[in-house]
Length: 178
Image (cartoon, rainbow, N blue to C red; front, side, top):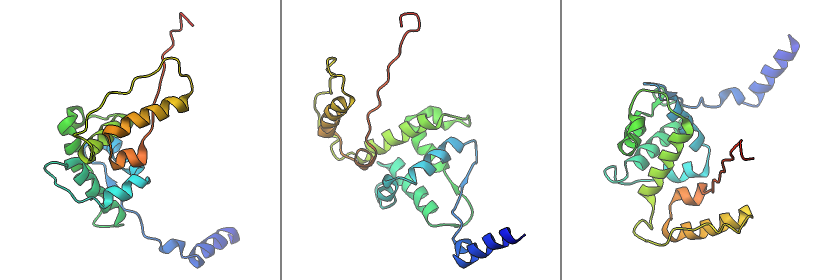
């Protein structure tokens, strides 16, 4: 077929077929929720910061494991798929539910991972300050977010805050009342 020859020829001419095959992640022990989280983080500016991280595996185990895993993925093909089991074990130290072989929600794991990473890399961990209080008269989401960001920045400084800070706000409405 001429169309498929044209596409194949175009790929060869553009050298697209010579691109290195990205390294995958091993799904050993039902860890696809972890792998999904790592693949997501690998495509953010936070990954660049974490890949350069060199720290103490005794006091910063999650940061060290995530750095090693992101570097293994960035190195390309390597010696087969990279394993996320070390990261799983590090996160499970503070969040035991992730230590089993059951399937878990990727967003819950992402929150736990980012929380641990922030705690380990927070340069203002010893600074204390008042918790932000919500002014119930303020409806503008941007004003609320700016207020919380200002309060949060007084006691928190880490690559997680720098690269991924966001405010999540939710509300529950009773179907009977509304």
